[in-house]
Image (tube, rainbow, N blue to C red; front, side, top):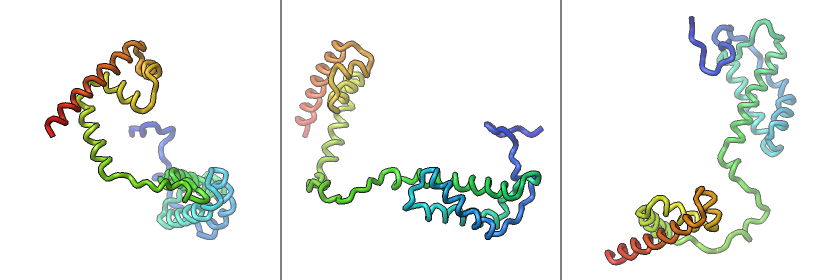
Length: 190
């Protein structure tokens, strides 16, 4: 007996069914339906034509390669629509996963957002040296130092770490003292 794939609800049918030939005209005839589906799936109007084109080209190429294998018991038009919707879901998901789509923020006039300050090339070197020194502090004290350094109140730090407020203050005081001693030692060496 063949072992079922992990998580599979039914065995794959693609290998058991023979490939069915589908004409590109039949695929192109479904473009209006695919366009509406992609719009409902969250593809904005400005990119709808591009994603639709990727769907149609992908479907035509897959059909030519013999990857269209509907079950013989299903209605041919319905099987084609379901197959194309599967391709559209895949292409829309790829569209939403692209990094430049997730991070792009459209601004009408970006010039007011520019501060004019250029980052110092020495800033990253200094930050690395401080982080190396911070590694020498005990991890419990380091956690409090980092959270307070990011702007958290000590009472909030205590809640985050699950310790009493007095313990958080003690760790902060010991961490500052230890960090100052380590920084003084490193300055004497250099």
